[in-house]
Length: 128
Image (cartoon, rainbow, N blue to C red; front, top):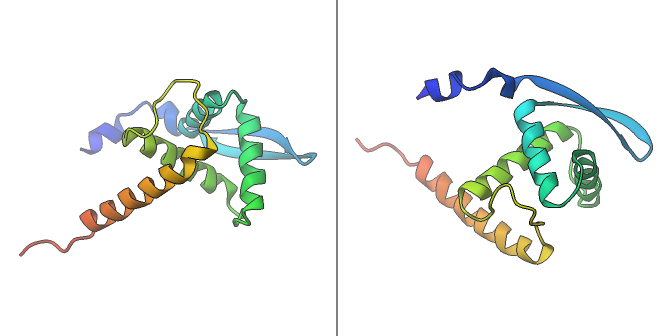
């Protein structure tokens, strides 16, 4: 099983730093190449650059009063959730289809239900 992960292209977990400007302040974000690729895919869907997507996520998360002390972790979780939605068949990859606000509540509700179901499945006590 571990071979699937260990023998993956090592380029995926190499980190890369990108600089961008948010509110006139230059900042740097360091992520693994894998996550930069996923962010590029999400940005492509909404016809944005990666920098525009990150800036939008920053402002919207700040508006929602989220703790931004570890913004790179937030970005990694965003990427993982996107891939989870793709794996569950809720979104398709490599198409220019913006994630519309009117579908978000439905997607969030379904995602929450699946998350709870997975937790129940993977936290069961082993049979004796």
